[in-house]
Amino acid sequence: MPGLRAYPKVVVTEVTIRDDGRTAVNEEQRNLMGSGRGFIAALDQSGGSTPKALKLYGISEDKYHTEEQMFDLIHQMRARLMSSPRFTGDKILATILFEQTMDRTISGEDTPAFLWKQKHIVPFVKVDQGLDDAKYGVQLMKPMTKLDSLLERAVEKGIFGTKMRSFIAEPNEAGIKAIVDEQFEYGHKIAERGLMPILEPEVSIKCSDKPRADRLLVEALQAKLDKLDAGTQVMLKLTLPDENDLYAPLIEHPRVLRVVALSGGYSLAESCTILARCHGLIASFSRALTEGLTVDQTDEEFDEKLGSNIDDIYRASLT
Image 1 (cartoon, rainbow, N blue to C red):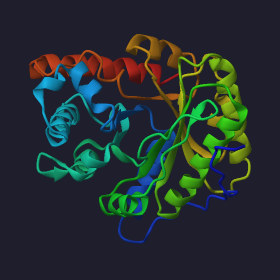
Image 2 (image 1 turned 135 degrees about the vertical axis):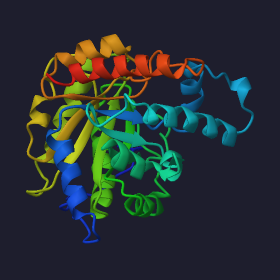
Image 3 (image 1 turned 90 degrees about the horizontal axis):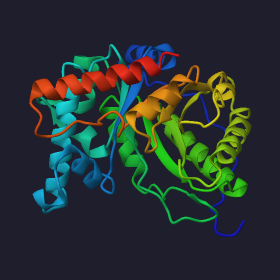
Image 4 (image 1 turned 90 degrees about the vertical axis):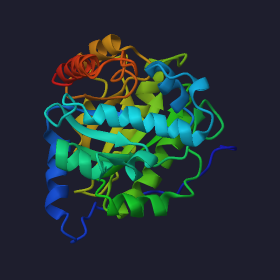
């Protein structure tokens, strides 16, 4: 179809762990991600979404004047979250980091190391460079011109896996197929570096016919998964479905390590209600996780509200 980038047929190779002392850690992290009880915290807002995240946190745009100041403020917010005594591996399996967060420190320690050593939380990193222009009801990802160097740094810093996001606004079959092809193509490159790819083809909750878009996406994903070699696995991050247990075939697929759900603009209460109806699906929430958290709260107030949000998401992820 004109206007959609074409990608070759992909055969994702087995994820291999380099023999550099991380084999045991990777296997432990893989087991946690495959069968652990809990959910993923998504703290990977990029430059485009950071102003909104800061505003919800109580920091308006007139409080910073440069991009550097903006990123300093969002890191302070993320560091406060991750340093909270309520933010632990007891209920949070993993955290998805923004690239700059991966490269920064918390309490003098590299963020990925802090998460794993201090919290026993598996670190992931967002690798996409944003969305391309909309065509045929979808937005593919912009070409990942920095992917090789980012993956190299991620491996060096002890990152377990990656996440990349595409966007589906309309139930266009050709557009959705192109989205899935692209996700698996980049997933192949990521897996070759020994990292676990989370594929995130998000369906808009404002889609004109979201149930149909959800079903088309499931069909396209199943077709790709069925062609993967034995022993190969990916993870999937999908919008909360309108149809209960729609993702059951994906959750049960032997080529899928875990299926997680994004909140997509639903409130915390709405997200947890929908999630609890979907057996085997766990959360990977961002905005819903930080709902009600503000910069002017005392540490006690902040920790109490964060703990309440975590408890709600954790319970909904146990069904």
